[in-house]
Amino acid sequence: MSVETRREIPKDIFKAYDIRGLYPSELDEESAYRIARAFATSLKPSVVVLGHDMRESADQICQATIRGLNDQGSDVITVGLTSTSMYYYAVNTLNGQAGVMVTASHNPAQYTGYKMTGPEAIPSIAFVSNEELWRLASEGRFTEPERRGEVIGREDVLQDYVTAVLDNAGISSFGDLKIVVDAGNGMAGMILPHLFRRVGSRPIPLFWELDGTFPNHEANPLKEETLRQLKETVVNENADLGVAYDGDADRVRFVDETGQSISGDLITALIAREMLKKAPGARIMYDLRSSWVVPEEIEKAGGVAVKCRVGHGLIKKQMREEGGYFAGELSSHYYFSDFYYTDNGDLAMLNIIKQMLSTGQTMSELIRPLQRYYHSGEINSDVADQNAKLAELEKVYSGGRMLHLDGLTVEFDDWWFNVRPSNTEPLLRLNLEAKTKEKMEEKREELLELIRS
Image (tube, rainbow, N blue to C red; front, side, top):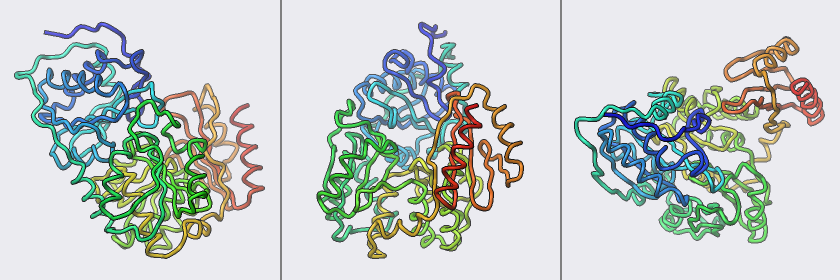
């Protein structure tokens, strides 16, 4: 018996690691049902842990996903509303052979999607490519299982999760720190009241009400415009720290007491210090777009600095294979091997607070010594033939030290650049850093002219 295809599932909603599309035009209940059956066909999990975020479409997509998993023979344990970080925790502690999180992360309100894992919350792409999932779901022909699965449990892991992250960070008080947290109407707003209550702290909350329409601003802290009210509130309230979460709360951005936002790579350097106190000499990974400051600070703290590729599926794989203890990305994802090799915005926040308390320094005092180079930020350019352009750049800059870990990285004594292709669009992404502002600006314009010619 087979399930016949009734509509086409767009291939481009299957991203490099996750699945994201507009609801319902690109990803609706029927598509969700078939994707779930394709996932269960590929991984053959006996038990799947399922969670979802607060988007308006989440319940409908969840129900279709449950039907698909059950019809392919997989039992389901639901954890209901959850952040992605808490969902990863649930997959591990509930012994799921696979996990499905219904979320579109930081995307705007009209999107829905999936973050899928195998056992131990290992990204699903380690077991089946998203291209293969798309093929199976598009064909819509599935072998009937020996038995139909069922929902075997509904678990609430929130309190256990809060205990686990506080224990992992080794923190029981936030002292007298005044902290403003913008949850962006996302899933952090469900978890943070319990976390702050547990340490006896009263934060200044911004947009903690769960609302998948995102009425206040897009839940994407990488966009500076989304941080405007957080910055203003930190300054107006004389707060010590500002924290902004994305929609599914696995990513977090920080603002110092002067209202200045802090780039993700510098936060990687700060958290690395805390992690190396727990594991002296450990291997700390950082994505290759990060400032020179990051490996310098890791080595200064006694760690081994290791460059890694961009993207959570690749970073988690490299951490497991090479013994990475902690990793950080420019995109403000932070990965903890001692918390199931997963990215966790709550642990990132706790480790920053811990460092502020232990040093007695303000956030700006911690960051200022790290701001010793000049970074361009990531700049995108439309390029039809990405490989040809990368080959051209390699010839032009052949005098530098080259690395092909992710696109093309070229280092000189006083500046470096990385150009890498987008996984989903005809774009090249440039990151560049120099020892002087003048050199950064000069080389940035030089590279952009070459890339866009």
